[in-house]
Image (cartoon, rainbow, N blue to C red; front, side, top):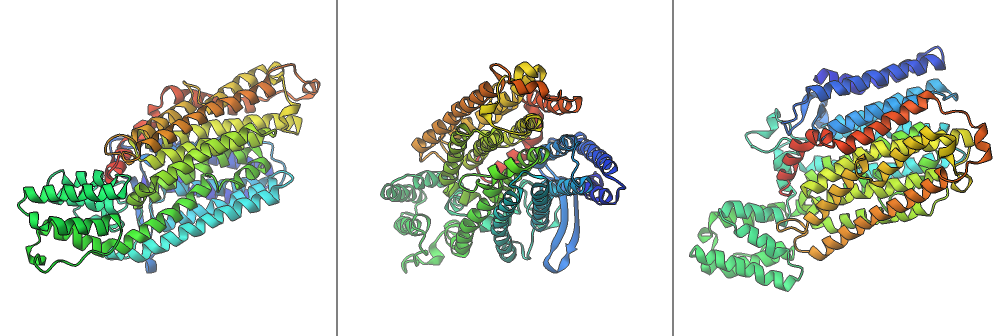
Length: 622
């Protein structure tokens, strides 16, 4: 199956080259169609052969690529990537059908389209950070040309803006990659780009850690206060470390200091080591709370008299890893910015409405359905697994960005008169739930964020296609010039209700599951031991505001539906061409997928259950 997986990645690129050599546009279109059909079939074969009880990557390939810098061609699939691979291949086929009437340079169009498919599949299946970056950039170039050549009147502006924003994010990611490459020898003895610990990797030694994250030794190097306290807890063999964690989460620093001193004094008294209590309390205050260098050992105590448990865990590891904790915080934000641009999230979202408005309908379907999901996927694959302690320290800021995107995108969508721009801003709002669900680091939050990506991939692609169907006939997207479409196209109106109501989050459709799980996960963050336990009020505010986003979404979707589909039909509708069977096929497949995912969400969760359990356990949350 590993051979099948790699062939699936590169088959579209091979087909793209053959499209350029095809004798005509019709032959190139037929070739591209069969390539996407075969690619979808291969992804379904991976689903059938996948072991859903395993947490780590499967069907792996690992061969040297650039030996001078230890780059490997390493690919594989796990529960985090499998659903996105199926979504990508499925939408690629539907987007190809939506491109059936492309007349401008069809050979080049279908060639670029297939190269884009290779880039997207490579992003989801790469297990080497360098290889991930290569595919991440490969997916950028075809999209630039597909928007810039086949887009609307302002296509050059939209394509350049898309390219520059995404390139800025790529530079942030490149900086993080170089930093990781330079510091990994401190943990594993060599420079490495491996971003997923393989269950068969010889680098892992005998460590019994879940095979769903970066090497545990690398993660320990980037540990912050929380992680060191948990190691202190493990070494001490009791619950004192958990008490220290809870004490450090107190909002008031003076109260936190006193609580830490009390915990240490009591635990050391019980061990008959009361003489060390004051010094260890001062040490904890300096290192874990204020971030200063460790205090020198008092002469009367001496290193020899200090229990090995406290010396090895509290002193040596803190002194050795302090600079890497600083790096982890910077790297967390740089990689987060790179992926928030791709998602996109406020304030890095401004390229998206322009790109969607100017892109042709099939490319808008792929852009909203797949490319935006690369940002959320990379956050789950790279940013959080590498730097979970930094994610915990800054969770409230990241969650705030998610809530801001939810509300800002919804208000902007409500203000639009351009139908396609309204759908574009709705994507900004809906992807805010992804950011929020990931940020709170709860099991329901992560499951909700992931399902939101899958559900939005279906509903957003359907919405853009529905807009494109009418645009091809009316040649405008002005909401004020539409109305009564349901009377003219009854079946189209029915499928439109499924697509737009799925985006609205109507129970029984795919948009509901992700949003409700993210909201539940947000409130779960206030539970004892969760990352928001010390900021319960803030968690409740975030949850309430995110819930308001559901109301705003219902408002602009229903208002749009009333303006476009209700009322008396326009006179010009009589001149509109009937909707073809091909168009009904596309919206029918997407509509059925929205219904099935809404009723049977376990189709996704069965793929992610083991992987997410391993990931959250490895990060010490969930």
